[in-house]
Image (cartoon, rainbow, N blue to C red; front, side, top):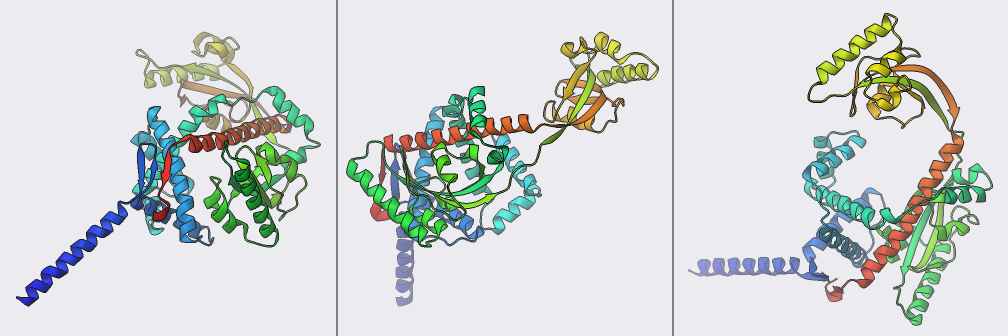
Length: 429
């Protein structure tokens, strides 16, 4: 009888312990607008971030610091997800699976191998998909909210290039470390002074040898904090305008004085610099084609049959240009005897380019299918061309656009965070 009573008591204690544990995991850590972040959600995300930090062979920050940084990231992500939901932005399962397959392929694996590798690292495939879905939705939201507003004019590109002393300036790449000590837009003078003093103190410690990666993880309010503040390799045009004047004065290992912006105080360190770009040579191809489109009356087999018949007529002496004018469904090039003139890499769709690249000069291809229909292709000439000037213009245009998006995103996120209703239960952190 006593044994039975003891057993019942033990079961009761275990059940109570389970309830307490469940209650702890369901504790609300933060309220974000009309949603909440629970302890179990925070623990799950912290575990994922810890795996990433370990994989990068960096030291994991103290638990309290890591939880605070991860929670702040979750808050900003949740605000963006809420905004995306209101805007009706979703990700289909097909898009999600396709993106996962692409990532696996870039890592030289199939999906099954990639899934096994994730699980070997302690990351479930389901959580990986959830994170990827989140990133895709947020990127689509940012594209809608920010990307559409960003314009880069020809004059901006020309002005940027005019201000460069030489090509090497744009060719040099910089790897910067970044720490942000955030200040709200409506901050008081005492709050601004406090943030400036903190930034000055961090700079002093970094110059004295304190580890930058750990300092960024512990102190930065930037989205890259959990990556140790590493902004990756960038050309001068891709670096935020705010930092450009400073980097010209910095050597590897230098830490600049704090830089003020509407977001707060920025601290940058020159982690590394590297090389310049050689002349950019491309192969230009003079090409012509005949296109047969498919429709209700012309299927794939019929289109191929017609093209093979045209190819045979050309082999027997008929003029390619005359046949293109008479038979090609590409009316623009048909008027020019099928000529697409000189084309460079990326000018044409991939299947067309791949088939064209395999042809010798004057050779005519077998029928080739693209999204537009079926083609026969003839290469009339090839030449190598120094495309450095145009290549640099495109680099500068892309860099200016990327920089503008980054600067606008930082301000947009800071404003989104400052204007939202967020309550953090500090005693539960």
